[in-house]
Image 1 (tube, rainbow, N blue to C red):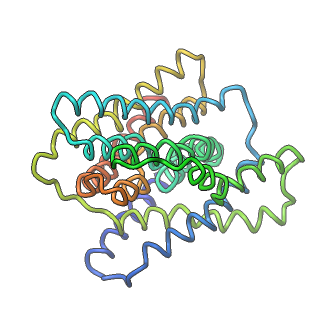
Image 2 (image 1 turned 180 degrees about the horizontal axis):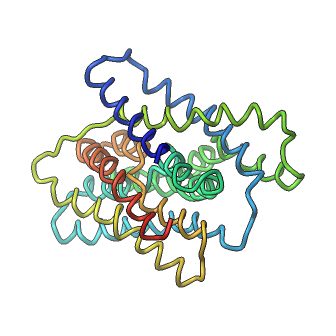
Length: 300
């Protein structure tokens, strides 16, 4: 309970600081730089060598792909039916197909399932959501913005991402028996900064401005991201005989709020940025209720 209260407190503090304290320009950029380039790699290096590689670890990663391509199919079909613009279809696909499996997923999984659950959450993020963002996410953004995706740029983005490189290194270290205790004593406190700073950063960026004729996209998008997507992931896991933490964490990561980076990508490609930010803000607030409820339903 205390860990979940910490998440709420950090998120609320970020929102209050953004509203009343007027933080210096570049604060969010600076925090996110630390999280992506220092805290997240340290966390991956600490946790992954301890991860017990089992036959069910494919599920948390594959579930993220189900969420993304399910969102694309739903947005394309509903968009054609309701007459959405190409920009709206692209925005809903990106924001509701990619989850906030790191900045929100890591702290929430740690709060509900400890370091074992956090290690599984890393698999879902680093082998699921991140490669999706850098590949299929960029491809969708390019297609709906009328541009051609660059395969070389996508491959370079994946192969040079700090956390991905650390994931490869951590798997090697784990196979060799793990880090010495002195290395863990350095990596652990650095990685621990991710939880409070990530939620604080999300709070700083929180926005909710429902524009005209955006309600249908909001309902369809979040209906998929927060309810139908985790149910689809659960169905896949049960049908494949997956159980325990891989099933629980995979389903909960599928239920996570929309990804901040996906919203930024939608903004870069001019895919209804206002709608993307509205879905992001509403999704963050609602997921703080729906994810813990989903955890209870799964027996967590």
